[in-house]
Image 1 (cartoon, rainbow, N blue to C red):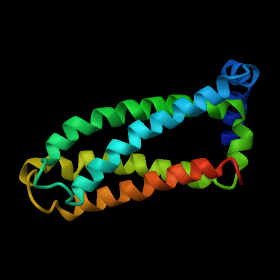
Image 2 (cartoon, one colour):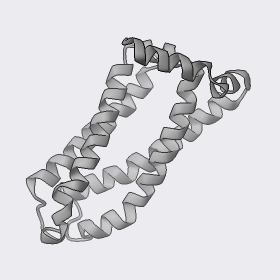
Image 3 (cartoon, one colour):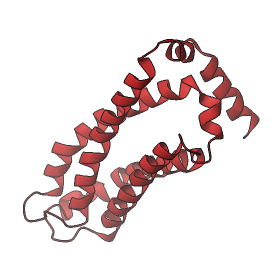
Length: 164
């Protein structure tokens, strides 16, 4: 692990936040439960949106309607998941970072986030051209598939952190 990353993890773990979470009897499991709820609020609607990009429900709802209804929930879930994730990490940052699944989880999290940015700053800017089409452009479908795979990997990686 690079020295800078190790230093940051030690700072996080030694912070007041890390000490509070390690010291409070039920705080860690409560944070875990809230983290899971945040993940559900992020990934559930994201999967529904990704499936729409892949063509499911194209006769029922337009891409922009799906985005307007689903993505705000994703944003809220992302904030909850990231906030609780950092808090959980602070309790034992060096241990978590040393787990075999850590590079996978955090690498796929980076892939998922970059995918979102590329999609919204790329093909989605022209959504008016394909909003109601039976088949979205290949770039939109690729983004939907990449999202499904990367978020699934993040979830598996997160669960595996406890076992590797």
